[in-house]
Image (cartoon, rainbow, N blue to C red):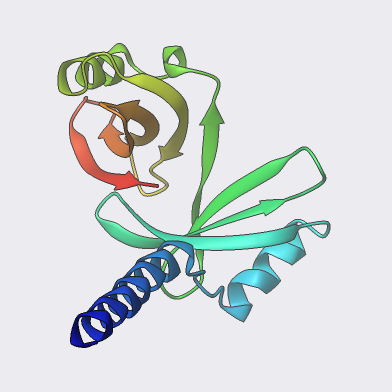
Length: 158
C-alpha cells in the first residue's frame, strides 16, 4: 500500500515537472499596445502577432513576428520603450553572409545541418549580426554570430 502511494506521488510530481517545463517552452510573451499600434500603423494587414525576447548588439529586445498575408511574414525588433529598433531579414542561405560566418559554424559545429538564418543590421552604426538555426549532434541550436565571425550568443531550443 505504502509503495503504491509513493509510486502515485512520484508520477504526480513527474507530471507536474513535465507540465512546468512544457509551459515555459510555449509561454507567449505579451506584446505592449504601443508596439501593436506601431505595427498596425505601418502594416495595416498585419495579423498573427507573436513575440519573444532576443539580445542583439548587447541590447535586450522584443522580437515580434507577424504575417502580412498567408505567405509573407515579417520580424521586427523593439527596444524596451516600444520603439522600433530594426527588422530581421531572412536569408536564403549562408552564401548571403560573410564567409567568416560559415567558417565559424563549421569550426564550432562540425557537420551541422543548416535550418535557416536571419540578418540583423545595426541601426546605430556599422555592423550586423546573423541568427543561424541549425542542428548539431541531434540538438537544435540558435546561434548568434557577428559579421566578424564571433559568436555573440547560442541557445538550444526544442
